[in-house]
Length: 205
Image 1 (tube, rainbow, N blue to C red):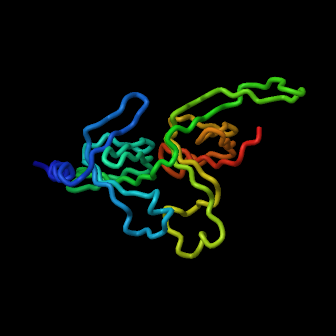
Image 2 (image 1 turned 30 degrees about the vertical axis):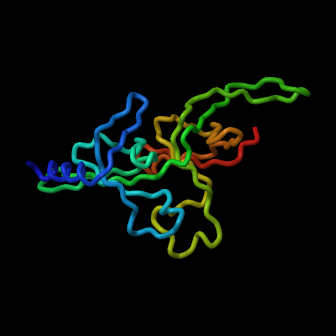
Image 3 (image 1 turned 135 degrees about the vertical axis):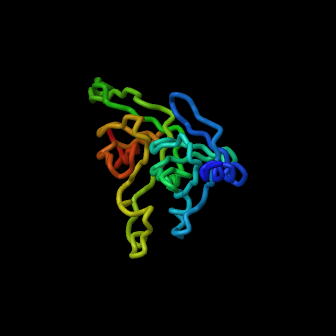
């Protein structure tokens, strides 16, 4: 057996099963080791930031949403890095962020109509529903001290991490929960592969 096979067998014994959630069809049958990062101490980071060791033949890629069955939690995959031994990948180390939105919706303006009292109202087209995402409010004041941890660097605006396949665009409306509306003011596409970081503000349209 190869080193990768040995590690895969070990993960099947000590790890947890997970499902890769995709629109084209879920992928199950893989097992990984989910851990808190030893480098973080702040409650916000501990709540949302995880590391996962996955087998050498995993189908997990950045931008995927994975659900760990035993804890019934979903995570967005932001990084997947190969651990190499003798010129072959023997396992993958992934960075995950926990989804705190399970059924978000993206809408796009589709025109205007006249509402009551002759006010123009924006019409909305649903672009994507049942979006898994992580939405975090900006950090201010004492939260931005000198010992900021790597997982929180840059978190100075209200942000939504969402898989790129959702197809978000600037000026879309993001609805994480019924009655909450945000306008997508900026989209950062280069912070994580296949993951869009939406910079959002309250939407009063």
